[in-house]
Image 1 (cartoon, helix red, strand yellow):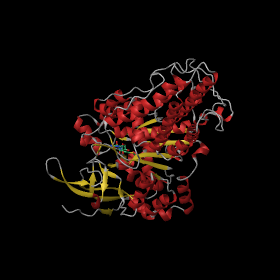
Image 2 (cartoon, helix red, strand yellow):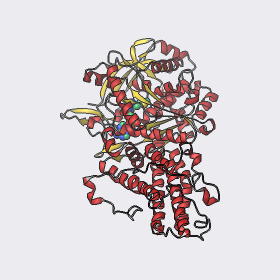
Image 3 (tube, helix red, strand yellow):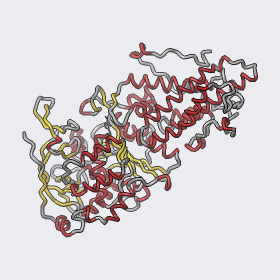
Image 4 (tube, protein in one colour):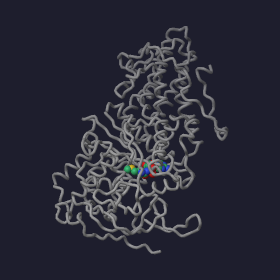
Length: 599
Ligand code: MSP
């Protein structure tokens, strides 16, 4: 079947009359220059450190199927940013929730034989349960079926309508129910379904598309192209990482037709009716995107949060967030998000994890084996925002055994083991053994290690800020290895405890190592909150001593007091992270390293 060009027919209606008379007929010329500049400026480099408020969101999750690891990845990514901002002293709001309207959900509820709201509540609870189990520390959980959200959407719609940006027309073209997305003919290709039938599919998602022709309301998206380009060109960090920013700019070079923003009630009942026209239901993406405003307090008191909004999104929904959403916001006269952080996908066997492919990994099934923190660490250490990552259980086991159990856990174990630290205290640092000039017992590699750990908070900060969390974890893991190297090099278990100089050096080695561990524990809090808590508690670091300004590494080396010196260690001497067993890994078992305990 030949693809027919999309057709947008403007029809006479109340909205159209208003449109023609309205100064907003052309939104670009209509928004005063001054106002435009203000809107764009607010959306960009405004420093949030000054007002100390920060707002981060996950996408809201479709409730047509149960949560999987890919969903958890979006949530863990946002949770990490939120926790990091809290450590930095920000007043951070973190929103997540569920996207419950639309044809896809309506059909899923029908298939399950449940009324839509009961169906949505059941699945929404499953997402909530997963997030609670995985320490996703959201401060608000929004459901699009809530009254506060319906009010926000209706208000938002009315603002766009009053500004003459919505008109009644008719849409004819391709629609993917699975993606709840309209597609141009160029975005559609041929495929065979499971029974060998020829079908049309979205080239991007592979999901089936159908030809749709109906009367509905259109949003004047085409009029926003140059404003969107201005925004992106003026704010090179608006969409991160850079390749995605570039992709959005490319899309804006292509056709940008007006967007259908409602569906006929005869086809879709499960949604929010268009204000003043009960025969039309608001397009699910417009409905869903407004959730970010709902949580911010729209329409009455959203400024505090809306001026500092940041979104985490998967790459599959970038177009909705980086084109439709900013256009809606510009139309409504609201500031644009400060940044849209994009991540790629988790694949299994090279294919995007999804219910329809039957290759989903259920994090709740895996977490008893790997622990919640283990899953979080794996996702953020291996997940590279710019490219897809293939999931296997063996990868998880290898990584966690090497870095959490072996390297980090081993280091803590060595430095707190009664054999080396019988008094169970944070021992003293001896400036003569480790002087700032290389005249003591420390060697050149030790000074390099100190430099690396001293710089680590700044390195990690830079990577957390730019959402390159995997790079932050890479840097931390490299430093942990260096500290293990330091301990191994000086083999404190070989020192003569009867000799006072040896004893001072031994204490210094342990003091330096515990200081390193304190830095690692503090910096890892956004990633593995339980493990960090266990580690810091074992070191005797109190809850009020764990924020970013507390990192202050090794003050004794700089001749300053260390609040931890001489303090009793925490009593929980349990294993930080238990080694995971896998029959498949037998051949790859790492060689046993000598530990204080094995001496
Ligand atoms: N409901 C919309 C979002 C509306 S936001 C206003 C939606 N929901 S979703 O449940 O399909 O996806 C939610 C998030 O999960 C997206 O960020 C998406 O990219 C992410 N993931 C879903 N599958 C994924 C993988 N296999 N891998 C990584 N993330 C993936 O889209």
